[in-house]
Amino acid sequence: QVQMVESGGGLVQAGGSLRLSCAASGRTFSLYTMAWFRQAPGKEREFVAAISWSGGSTHYADSVKGRFTISRDNAKNTVYLQMDSLKPEDTAVYYCAAKLYSGGRFLAEYDYWGQGTQVTVSS
Image (cartoon, rainbow, N blue to C red):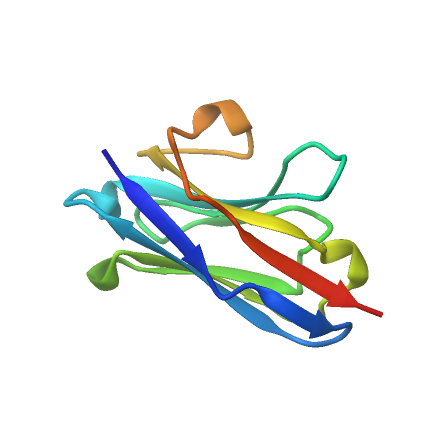
């Protein structure tokens, strides 16, 4: 079983930056596609970004493309989400997710989830 803990959320002004981290436990971290999803109050959880287990492929939602960057450090069993040029509409709880081998943008694909970290962007 893979356990994951998100950190790095907080309050930031529009135009500012935050970096989220997701620390995972387990011996097979490098074999998992890692992804970030987010959920705003009253809304469905939505895909944000994903990175392949090899680290050679990344995918982003159109709403964050050019502003967010996903990366991973397999030596540290950690995935990151660098968020720049933040907007109020980015306000949500951000969740880290993992899927063995290849994964995409669909919730049902992912097997393991973190507890979430709150990101609030003020105007």
